[in-house]
Length: 270
Length: 259
Image (cartoon, rainbow over all chains, first blue to last red; front, side, top):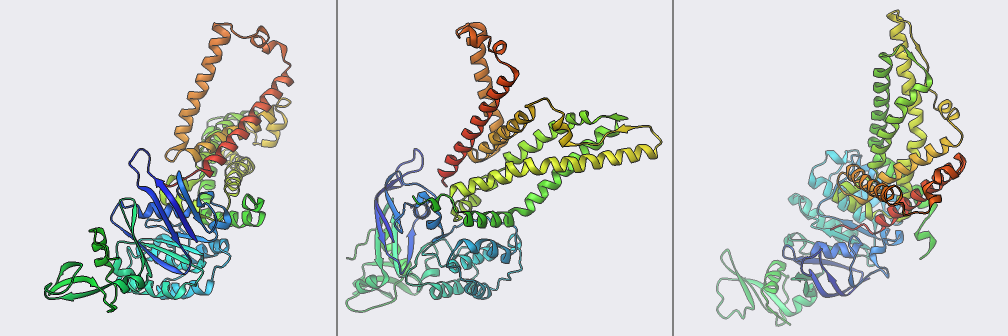
């Protein structure tokens, strides 16, 4: 569904943000896009959605160059940016006016997610808090049933119960022909939700694997002492250490934060 | 590329109705502000005059139309004033041509059709109120009501066409500025176009008046052309300018990106 080849990109006269970046991703996945501040996560999402043009290299999404912004392409892509500005209309009015652009829009799913998020369709969007508006946008994005959903920091501003609901509604709303990109710093919020991880660092993809592949290779645990633990990477934690070690057939839940820090610190475990 | 990717009537209808739903409050507010401006300016002018013939309305109609028209067209593409709104706008599933045509219809066609009606309604409301006040104060007055149609009918031959095309060209100029400049498009367009006009005028002044570098026929073009020919040339130039401005707006919209 997504094919990026030898992408070079920079803003103005700044140094290259991406240099020879290539990426391929198929439908049926929820991909977590991780990286430090300024690594280029949001830029990559904008390139995928046609909000930025790639001057060198090619970006192909569903067989099209996104920058053409053809209506048939835009009908199948929904982008929830980190910062947004919604019009001063009621939720129901917004849905009525915008749902018609998306051929597979599911009104019953919209109603269900709004109710899960405790949002009243009669409420005016401008009177909602930042978190409520974000929940509304997530609900709308999921209801469009677009083939490509791009969520930039979707859990920023969400309260604790809403983060759990977010994971539940995303996991239950998607079908096999959809691909979801979630860019986030809040890795705990997307644990048990994403099934692939991409880590960007200094304009390159330094990690791109599924959680299943990761759990085949490494295991995560907490130990009181590092002695004899075969650890590949460790961090001090309350009561001991969080460690990453060879799996050796022992499958554990992936600690995404530890994995991210290990990868950024150059730990290889192939 | 399939033509349905460039223009589709159903999708255009959907886009227009959706955009109107999102913007109707701002549009109503702008219409109300224009009506209030017409009424207040007409009232303040008429209250200080005991006689007002319908031709004198031109003194009010022209500056009000220029001010309101430039402001309204200069605020086209309101989403482009804000980065987040620009992002949402570009992601709406409609083609560039559909987005441009809608904006053209809302900011230029609608203005040309609705503003004269507002002028007639609120100009005449002010005239009626001033007459009533003067009658109540037992002051003799002769205030004629405004009729835009009559003003147009009584203008010299061909000039109404030039006025209409000139208005469209001026509105299109600031319309183009609104898609080009992110902040203060009206101010920047005014400064930019004043600079261009002064440069062109200065250039022609130098080569015609000072250096006499052009053919004498061109130098004395005014003597060779009849009024109708001059008007036709002006109409053609305005039409070309309008088309160029519209094409430029299309490409600026097409290449819009978010940094």
